[in-house]
Length: 257
Length: 173
Ligand code: SF4
Ligand code: SF4
Image (cartoon, rainbow over all chains, first blue to last red; front, side, top):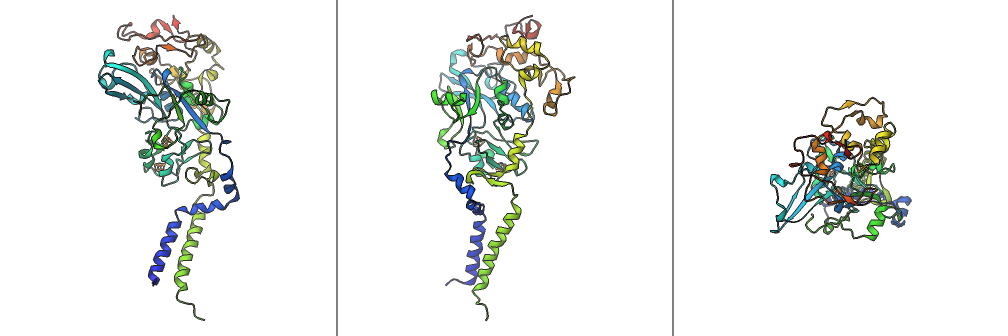
């Protein structure tokens, strides 16, 4: 027998539960339904290419990014940064990124110690930035609905809705997010959304004199990014997370993480 | 006829559901939407897309600076430094920034406070000899060339690079 008390409890619980997926009511809008069947390949989708073979670690990209996006220069947070990888003969791997490389790499002194040439088997730089994932875990975990993916594939943070809980920062497998000490919200690379939507390159691409970075539509046969991704051997970081990252690397190595 | 006692809890639950729907309609701003019905990733306020699109563009590069300084840009684009952008040295200065005399548009405000960073440290960011650096430079219009690197400990230590080198021609003074 269902008592009145049980019924009210179960009923209110159901209603409370409905509160979570209730936004799905909008699904009944005909335009929302129609878009579900529209082919996805027609959509423009931004993607990035990083050619690690060419990077010299000057960090001009990291500097330009900070100025462009008004991230306080001396704060130890970066939207894009450059990592140095050194594989030693004894099997160890040394990885560092002093100040996110915004002052560049000017000497051979990872963590203050010089590493002799004869101890090294290989060494290189790897620039990093937000991977603008197809399935961004940062967006999935946001309890405030503050971070989202645009139609063309860029994840952004709504600064007026972010409550600063930091879930997204801990849930990005690429450590691409940080806490912005000025806006007091989560912050991350936007692929310079204000520039790419005006037909310009990102600030980091403009600042790089070495042609390391490229941006374009992944499904536009005319874009350089499309040409590289479809004809050369590219790799993405940490594919095991299933995020479907859209920053593609040339010359990636297994020691990179 | 007296209402069955079973109806009252039903009305309560239905009422709660209706209240929730009304509350949602009022509370969720009208510009919140999920494009393509993708509620997992695209549920957001459209206004915010505009916020990011309207963010001011600051890094302008040679093309912009060349409008007033065509001589400098001509020089540098003909040199080995052809792909080095103005802001690499002319922003975030080591010397105190000077007020730029031109009244630029609102968008380019940050360029108003510019000077020049002619420090040895800045040059070292590209030209210090490090084992990690590729030995060749392929971005030059002259094709692949040897990338010029020096050992800063041996190469005229303590002297500013600009004493002998001209950055705009990538040669000697
Ligand atoms: S790289 Fe991190 S911050 Fe960027 S979209 Fe993916 S999960 Fe989000
Ligand atoms: S810090 Fe902001 S954007 Fe990140 S999960 Fe929390 S509310 Fe969302």
